[in-house]
Length: 395
Image (tube, rainbow, N blue to C red; front, side, top):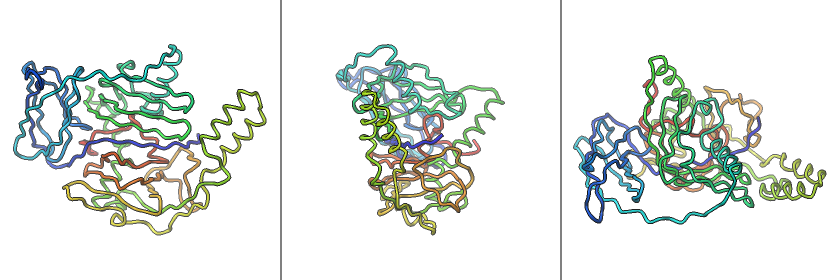
């Protein structure tokens, strides 16, 4: 299978990994009447730490790793609440007030059941994935997601007002995801989404847990999380990663993807098969030319910078693309736009495009609005392969 897709994933959640000892307690109430809000979801985004408020609006999160987190409180009918918290040895006590949510008027699109099923199938493919793990993912509430397809732009948008619940029976997690934004474009071949998520362990037999442990390690090794953790600890080589400079230019003989798709669609309607075949042949041309891969490997100090915030690092480079090779796995997918030199084994390879300097934490999680663009191996990583921020191999 030949693939030419890119992937952007953005989470607004920084974390720091140390020993587990922190505790957060608090009370959630209405901002107007000060009445308690029971059954509100309270969690640390992108982790396994979550609970719900009791009838008095109280909650407790314990056994937390010290560090910076984003605390999220959400319940239907109220505005989502987020707050950065720095967990340490001393307990944290919070008084949280929620405002009622004003009804948002989303775009109304009338579609048939067949259209909804088609759009939903694309959403599942692009959001959850198509690998072996995805086959064991079950969406428990599919109609929680709202879908809007723009035919002229061939663009699918999605969002949820409540948790989208997915049980991943390959990795042993129930993932509750608040999808704030999702976009999948057939023209640009870019998939991006943003939101908050909570992981919960699925119950299982000893045999199942051993299988989940194995699958989690397979998903972890070679992943972006693994790479960023190895990068800041200066263990890239020991962990099997190599970084290179890649320079490339767009192929002037290949039209823009938007133009190709529009012409194919137009001539198909006109029944002009020769013209359709001509534009399809143009789409098969390489997207880039004059590609050059440096022979010398990069070091962490070439792209890594410390920030003023403890446990948070920045990545910055100019004039080239970051070419990341993981030498402990072979790539089984043929990415037609990923450059490979003839003398390089077919290892898993990812190309990282930098739009602006971006941030990540010691748990290997990228956060903020300036997320990088992934091509190659990392572009395949979807919900079916995601792990919580507090995961470590060997658990």
